[in-house]
Length: 68
Image 1 (cartoon, rainbow, N blue to C red):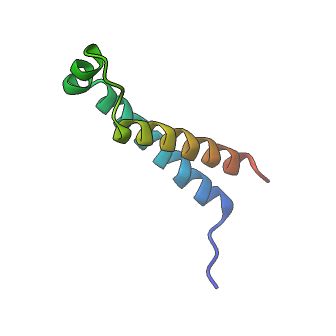
Image 2: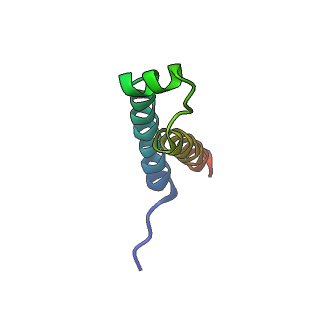
């Protein structure tokens, strides 16, 4: 059976994490999001999922790369 090396999986997770963090940050700083926060609204679930998912994916990918 075909098995991916751990480094490839780690790099993929790290790249996915960075992409999610960038998109989440852009969405967080969007005009409509800023307008909503100005009136007391919390960030949307989509933004929070992208930021949290990106952070977790990035950390797991980084740890996988460092693993021997």
